[in-house]
Image 1: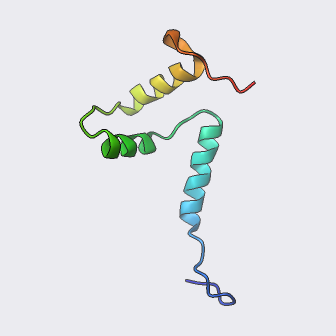
Image 2: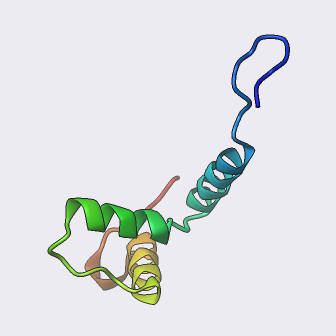
Length: 75
């Protein structure tokens, strides 16, 4: 479907909403597991992929500086 005035294609609202959800999750420190899996499959196909729980725990440890990692600080 397109605009009746300018004939430009209508925006894909589902894709826009998905991007907004992903952005909101990243703002509060909850990275996207599905994006991680897609990246690993395309860029590192020979390496294992963490489970959703392992991914969450790894990101949490990274965010709060567990295991000798430097903690993420915005201020």
